[in-house]
Image (cartoon, rainbow, N blue to C red):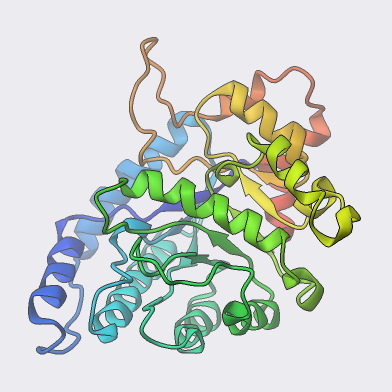
Length: 327
């Protein structure tokens, strides 16, 4: 069985940060410039990255930009566009160099000061020119400043339409946070929770029945607050729509770092709607008191005794292969 990790981010050196800093410092005055990283630098970091995957038994990893670095709320919008393009091109280089281990997932230049349709040329470029297999979708490009319609709003329809035309999935993943109330880690979970509840109270899937949306980090508060959402749903659409059936319109990753939460997610969301994802290396790359890396998620899933072999295959390989068209 091939183990496919659908949720991971590009590993890059200080060159990426330096490029972002130059864009922000000049506010785009000096033009786009280029993210210059040597092949030797790429190999040094990717070799270490892939060694960490081999250590935990991951065969293929889908890599995307690191969301908190995407600076969607920064102005002018041109620097958001340029940064997304350069990091996506870096991912394409890594995928080409390590084609047995990586597949590309692009970031979008989601500046809130431009119409969403203007984000989509980069999506099309990455799918058609780089053969990427999906994209990230940040539900709050204002990065905590407020005013952004939630994902059930028609403002997002041009994005959904293009995703359906290209037949690629989007991983709903929060990004940066500019407020002092929460870190970007907290903001991820907040925004992913809002995304689920907004989408399921909307008509999005009636308009776009072929839309493929995956919610990162196990779905935010869903399924852990499932009782509350079931109760609230009784007052929505005359209580005629079953919340658990609606939930099956979405997919989820397994970027959770304890067995109890993983088991609940698989029971509530369904083993055929959950795909292996770890974000390794990332926030979970720390060791617990027993010396286990938190983002070594596979042993936790393997330890769930009630899973059948067919269900394990769906989680580790089958669903991702079909959804991302990996073969």
